[in-house]
Figure 1: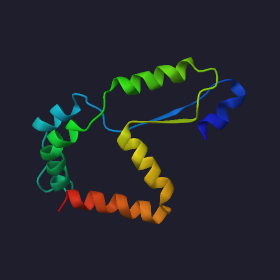
Figure 2 (figure 1 turned 45 degrees about the horizontal axis):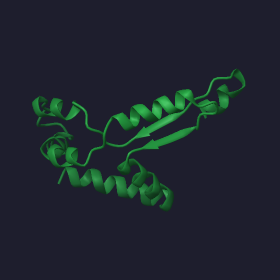
Figure 3 (figure 1 turned 120 degrees about the vertical axis):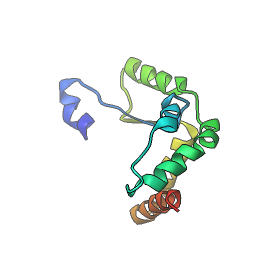
Length: 115
């Protein structure tokens, strides 16, 4: 939408939709805590405890950097770029599913974190 609004000004807007990439963020989770009374406590603990396995599958962050650079150098940049195998799969799932099915899938995933 922003791209359409700014088109006449000569400004292009691209959404970069990255998946999970190896960064230092998971290291920050190790020392972070959520109040035990928080409704997010179980989900946060599950994410923190599962980070090792998740990060083994994470992509190279240089992929995102290259996508941004390619976009910046393009004479006609795309409106949306999905980067990373997991993001591509989620995008495909969103397109295969009805909005309700996709919302249910995401709710089930988050509910599984809190189980």
